[in-house]
Length: 376
Ligand SMILES: Nc1nc2c(ncn2[C@@H]2O[C@H](COP(=O)(O)OP(=O)(O)O)[C@@H](O)[C@H]2O)c(=O)[nH]1
Ligand SMILES: [Mg+2]
Image (cartoon, rainbow, N blue to C red; front, side, top):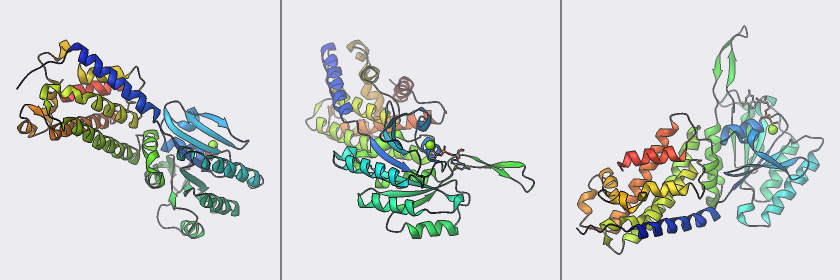
């Protein structure tokens, strides 16, 4: 097999190509838009902090739309939360008009501006449904917004009467009803001594049903914004990463469709770099154009010199059992596909393992872990 070593120039060109890819990816950064309504004190902010990363309700920047409606967002989190400061009965008409006008205004634009899902929060212990809440669900439904009724501060997650009433009342108006407990709550004995705590519950279900109704174009952004410490948040990130890996592997296969010398597997690296960046982003890491260089350096090596005597590809090959037998000196579509798939899947495994260490994910550390795993 011919061992042509890529020249420094061709490596620099690859890096340029990949940086070009970056502009393409970053222009396509979509955001998911979520409307959250409910009376003051029902637990909207607490819910936001449980579902999304970065304690968004505290750290996000609120931009007022009207007196009672603001859009919360944070740098690097592809999410807009339309937060109603409350759904107070005395101000209901004003709040409703503000919300509906904003939903309408967004409907007039690109699908990216739409409200992609609405959470109508009702505190379960209050055991009360207001006409205003039913009316708002109806109005939103008519505007094509999917409404999820979120029962907050739920205590009993068994079948209970109030939940049955809520489901019946919102039948045909809401997509579904979900019970939640967004913070750990103390458990008392008869003498009111704290004897334990009730865990957070229902957040995974809320993530699951929300993701189902969010348009496909916004699912990746939604997954990115999710709190990785929730089981379903992590699952959705893995699901979105899997989609990226499939698309990238197909793109790599297309490059390999015209068989190229095996040593030219570096030709796949712009595709693979893009894949790694996208996966990093889904897992909530901030990737800027300047942090792209370490990605490329990990994948390609820092210079032609580092490639001499070590084939990155052999490292990856070791990870794919039986791959060696596919390789007859040329990089076929199948091999290109499998190499890329293996790299993407390994990266996800690495990230999941790092997540278990209870520290925020950091790109440099993640790339090093990938490098070690591949054996570069
Ligand atoms: N027991 C319990 N308290 C909650 C829950 N969610 C929120 N709270 C509490 O309810 C209060 C109001 O919550 P907040 O999120 O500020 O409500 P908002 O006005 O709707 O944004 C706070 O003291 C929260 O700690 C929950 O699931 N269970
Ligand atoms: Mg609040």
